Length: 301
Image (cartoon, rainbow, N blue to C red; front, top):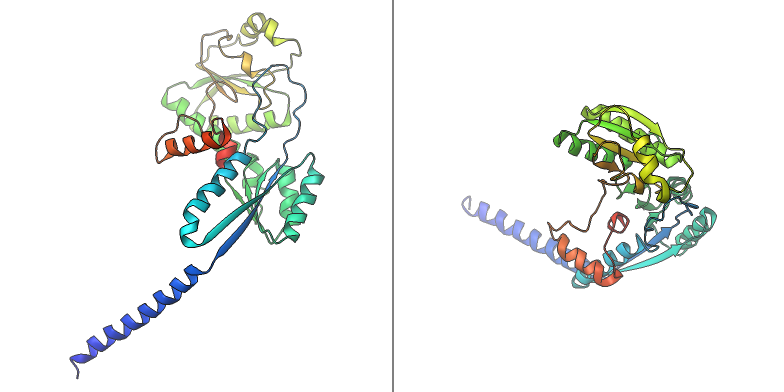
């Protein structure tokens, strides 16, 4: 009898495991329907001095749509169904109203492609929901204003600046001229660059604020070389998130040096040249869906 005891225990454990698997199988067979809200609001940047190529109006939304399509492709084998309910608002108040309406319909998962101020409003208005930040690189959202119901899928300015600084150090481009734009976003990007420079040992030989309001298409060749004339540098760092002047800095500097930051060599959360870990197939699926290349907003959503 003593010899049979171990076998009896094994037999009992086998029965328990089989019962657990049967219960799990029944749970897996139960249909799962998931509703996800997509909330977008991108403020009008206003008139720009440069004729830059604008960001696609559907940036972010197309990435979310592809994610839903891919999830349903595999989800059907598990009896899962995913649906996206999208809203593109004209102002912050309309975005908040749309979010509340979706919440009343039972949605508790939201992908938010909006500035930090709108994300804070949504977080406070929907405390029982999970929000994915796919639109704001604001550093304060990850530090002093960390929101308990928000996850970030878009890199912060600090993350991007750190990545850029590490690359510059590897290339031994350690002396930089920093050109700063006039907007609050430019100031925030500049703060991230200063932090990264101090952290990784870059030297800012000079810092200049951009304040010219003339037509840079006509005067870039004349003004930009003089503007960038200072102590010798290895690279020019640009903080121009809106695209006011940064497009006219490359190839116009006093010293023939690379340009990096918001223009030129730009750190980003996604790029069309990424091919590893299945990225090439993802790029092709996205291009078939949207008719364009995927950007960082699409990837974050």
